Image (cartoon, rainbow, N blue to C red; front, side, top):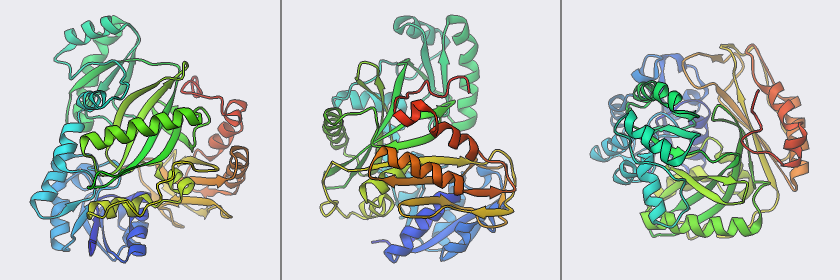
Amino acid sequence: MFDKILIANRGEIAVRIIRACKEMGVKSTAIYSEADKDSLHTLLADESICIGPAMAKESYLDPEKIISAALVTKAAAIHPGYGFLSENAEFASLCEKNGIAFIGPPAELMRTMSDKAENKKRMAAAGLPVIPGTETLKDVEEALESADRFGYPVMLKASAGGGGRGIRVINSVEELKKAFPLAEAEAKSAFGDGALYIEKYVYPARHIEVQILADESGNVSFLGERDCSVQRRHQKLIEESPSPGVNEAQRKILSKLCRGAVKSIGYTGVGTMEFLLDKEGKFWFMEMNMRLQVEHGVTEMLTSTDLVKWQIRTAAGIDISRLKRKEEFPGSCIECRINALSPGKVSVLHVPGGPFVRFDTWLLQDSVVTPFYDSLIGKLIVYAGTREEAVRKLKAALCETVIEGVETNIEEQLSLISEDDFESGNYDLTFMEGR
C-alpha cells in the first residue's frame, strides 16, 4: 500500500479522497491554487503545497507543477480525482516516468481509449452494441458525408471531450457546416485536441451508466447502474440507482456485457460504461470513462462499497476477491447536485443530517465561491428502502439545506423531484426540455 498520496484536484472530490486516505492510514498531500489557499481540502490534508495562480491551466492543469509537488513531498502515488488531468494519458505517463503510481488505468490503455471513436471501436469488438458513428473526422466534407449516411439529427462530438462537454446536436446540412469549425475550435481550446467525430442521435432515451471495478488479476465486479437522464445541456443534475427504467432481466444482460468487455481490454480500477436506453428497451454503448465519476457516491451508498478506497487498493495491486460479489442491491439511492449560480462568500451554511443522508462538499462557513472553477459546491445523496421513500427523504433533506451568500439551485432541484414524471420514474432525456 502507498504511504503517501498526492491529490491532484480540489473541491469536494479532494476532500473525499483525503478522508479515504485518513481511514486507510495513508498520508495525504493537497495541492492548491492561490484562490484555494483556505479551502477545506488544504486544511484536512497532512500537508499542502501551492502550485500556482487561480487559473486552472497555471495550476491544476499543469502536469509539470503537479509532478514537482509530488517529488518534493515524496508522494508514492497521485490520485487525479475527476476532471482536470484525470483522463490525461500524457499525465499518467509522466507519473510513470517519475516513479510515481497513477491511481487509474495504465497510461497506454488510457491513451488508446481516450479517443472516443477508438473507445467505441474496441467495445464493439468486445461485443457491446455501439451507437453507429465515425472515427475521427478529417474535415467538414467527411462530416457531411457521414451525417447524410446516418440521417439527421446527428451528434457532433469532441474526441477528447468529457463531462457532457464538446457535444452538439446537428439537425441539418447548413447547421453542420456552421457548427463544424466552431466545435473544432472549442474542442481545441477546452481539451487541447480539436478532433471531432459524428454518431447517430438516439432520442428519446435514458442515459444509463454502469459502475465497474476491476483488478490486475482479471476480476471484474458489476456494481449496478445509475440513471443520469435529468440533464441540462448535457450536464447532469440528478442521478439515481437503480434506474426506474431498467428491469432485472436487462440488468443481468448489462452485467454480463460490461464485465466481458472490461476484461477483454485488460482494464484495472474504477470505471464507468455509459449507455443510451432507447424506447424499444435496447442499450447502446456511448463511451467508457476511465476515472471516478462525480456521482460515485450514489453507488457507494447503495452497495456499501467505498469506491475511492478500492480505487487506491487496485492501483496498489490488491485484488478484489474479498469484495462481496453480489449483484443485487436492495433499496434506492438518489443524488442532487448543488451548484452555485453566482460567486460570493458563504454567510450561512447548514447541511442536512439523519440516517442515510450524505452531503459531500468543500464548503465551510465563510468559504468563498470563486468564478474560476466548476460550479459544483455539494452533492446531496440519500438512501431508503424504496424509491418512494428515497424521494420523500430527498425532499426533506433539500428543505433542510441552507446555503446563504451565494445563489444556488436548491429550489430548482426541489421543484424537479416534485414533478409527477420524476416521482413516477417515468422520465428520460426529454425531461429538461424547454427549461
